[in-house]
Length: 304
Ligand code: PSU
Ligand code: MN
Image (tube, rainbow, N blue to C red; front, top):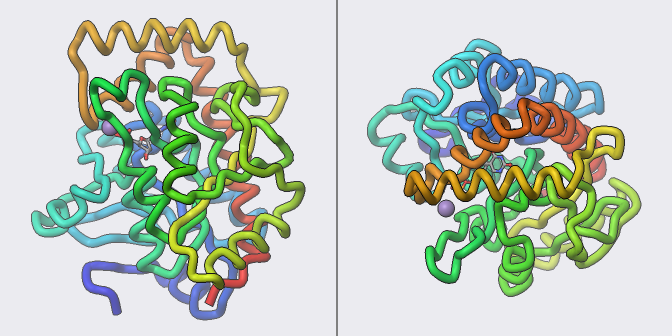
């Protein structure tokens, strides 16, 4: 029994019988996509995890309880509430629990809860990172520090180039976080398969990815890993078009003086507006693709 943590009956029995389980975050539902597409996507992601042989555990805080495994109703509520739900990262977790509130968990907070629940693999869209201009703003997502200390691997489509991808990769290197490309030697930039930056290692199969993770944790090397899975070719957007949209969104954020935890959701929504929904379609497709790979890796993971 872990205080303040509830596993759904399905997730609990899957973990007890050592079936593969994949964690899923909830900030992407409330703050990452608009309603109703966010709810549809969250449910589709769960379905893809199941189709690939694993049990999905969507993670959030509901009425002050950490939950691994949400009901359809709970997912729908988070999606409807949208940005009215608190965005909860590591620092916010004790506060929402103490106050009995609802919270949508970021990559960092989802990793923490997954780890408490005994889940070692997690699928999402993109991780937070070092923001452009971080040498002035010091805006570095808590996701990166979490990857350095919590034993959960995150399957993502790289990171958005709203971030400084070069500095993000430098930070991960310093913190000893492996960045593994799935069938790619380039770190993907979320909407596009290419970014101009290399991953540490290209890995060809889900089985080999699982081996690397298993060995890392057997050795007692604390922390997670980034498994970078590029968006499928047919769904990728044009680099130059996205770069222009990102520049416009960044300029808008600066003009409105948006800072701190608001900046990532603000940029995501602006980019969606600027691209007239094209970025959202790509976002949905890459998340589904990541859920599939995470389920495949989960099958081979041997974590005690
Ligand atoms: N990047 C995305 N979509 C998202 C997020 C990031 O492409 O939904 C969310 C994730 O939940 C991530 C969080 O953990 O934003 C990072 O926020 P911040 O930069 O404030 O740490
Ligand atoms: Mn930040």
